[in-house]
Image (tube, rainbow, N blue to C red; front, side, top):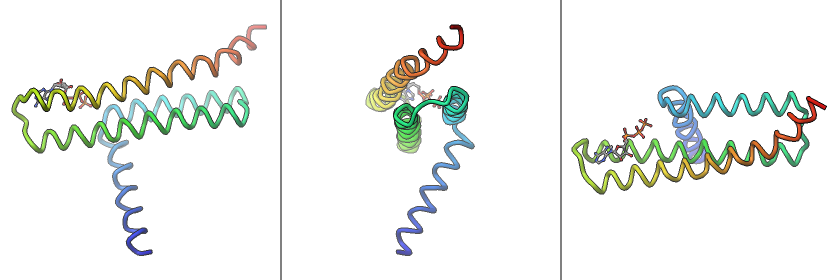
Length: 119
Ligand SMILES: Nc1ncnc2c1ncn2[C@@H]1O[C@H](COP(=O)(O)OP(=O)(O)OP(=O)(O)O)[C@@H](O)[C@H]1O
């Protein structure tokens, strides 16, 4: 149990460091807060909340993994290496892929609510 609690504390430290020190973490955290505020404003349904929170969780957790991989690469070497480029590009690609999906889902989710404002 103590090991579990320690792991929880270490993980929480990682989350805090991500939002404090990573520029992308701050941007994505801000976007997530805006999306949550929009969800509250439009009074979205339970199913819509599930989709919205799943998108936020997916994008932010992938960005955390991307940052961790970048740190690992930089620890290994700051010199140019084609394989480091592939690792960083692949991780960044995963974030972009998920972010694009989340953006499309966000538009599909919020569009009917925005349209209803003008009718
Ligand atoms: N050591 C390296 N060897 C080869 N290519 C690299 C190396 N470091 C960075 N790159 C290339 O530069 C790109 C940007 O790398 P960088 O580490 O600056 O990440 P970033 O996406 O700018 O990260 P962030 O802005 O989140 O710090 C990588 O995706 C990769 O293509």
